[in-house]
Amino acid sequence: MSRAGAAGGAAARQAVEPPSPGTATASGAAAFRESAAARRIGTCRALEPGPMLICIGSLHGNEPAGTLALERVIASLQSPGASRRALFRGDVVALRGNIRALARDVRFMDEDMNRVWGRARVAKLLATIRETEKRRQAGSPPLPPDLGPTAEALEQLSLLTEVRAEVRRARGPVCVLDLHTTSSESVPFSTLTDTLQNRKLAVMLGLPAVLGIEEALRGLMPHYFDRLGWPSLGVEGGRHRAAGSVPALERVTWATMAALNMVPAGEVAKATAPFPEGCDRLPRFMEVRYRHSIKPSDEFKMEPGYDNFTPVKRGQPIAGDRNGVVRAPMSGRLLMPLYQRLGEDGFFVVRPVKPIWLTFSRILRNAGAHRLATWLPGVRRHPDRTDAALLAPVARTRPIMGALHLLGYHARLDGDQAIAIRREGLVPDPRLNPLN
Ligand SMILES: [Zn+2]
Image (cartoon, rainbow, N blue to C red; front, side, top):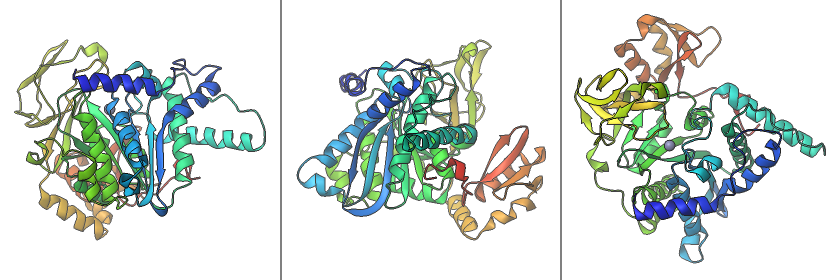
């Protein structure tokens, strides 16, 4: 662990309130109020209306770098003098993601807070928040939240409450930045749902970008915000405690503000150090082609020495588990090889996406070519949803999935049925919108 990393971790722990009990008990309402006070890193509002950038750090509690980077950005924006004037348009809101886990320096308490943003759960949480507000307005005592027995349910409720309060004050489009670090060595990179607006933002950050993570993992927080039509990027700043991770995430935040025309472009270089070397040697866009999912009983262990984006050949031994050697299932580059105890993903394999395909898919999507999806073999109209199509097993081949990706769809299981959902032009569900 680097000195900077060690000092950073201590600062993050000082910055949060004493941890509340780890489960939702009768004291849930009190714990919820406490955590709401610790949630907020800071807010800056320019005189001129503009976009609202919501930045969330430490959604995983063993990743203090995101919180530390946001503390620095807010301090810099609020400092007297020139940098105070740097934010000339819009609002910046910085929040801590998982306060209980951050205080204990663990990835999560009961469940991974970046896997819990599915429709049903978010709809239930927002219904609880609306009911709580109604009772408060009516002068009735608050109900203890009915959320199930996890610490993360309380964290999520508190985080959503803050997001709801903020977006109702927004004076322009909302954009979300979710700041993380990885257990392996890494250059900074972004992960995004492949929408045209997310791609545009990712390019402006100047980092390698990984598409298709939302197809491999369910319940990701940025994907929830995508479904509301808000551009949202996940960013990995480097290894958890590496000295460069905090400055990298700080730069990402400034670069996003500049991309949204909230600060002058020159402020990025003035406020932060350049990204580490190596970012520019990687393909600009890559896509997830394989996820190695694991359970604790697998006793999965990566071989040492694999960093993010290390090239691997098909059949190369890269890890071990209780059944023996784990080999790379295809050639490509490794993504997020797991070098920590908690986690459900052993590693991913990504491959570059050629710029010509990105251009082609942009033209197709802008031309409304998503309507052609049901011409593909095994793809049928969805009986109830205008934003989705049903997939027969014959459609789940690489060429047809590739064609669906080009047209702007991603695939997932809905119960037993595989469906393709449009990423562009989503139909927002009013129950999922914190503005309602
Ligand atoms: Zn993380």
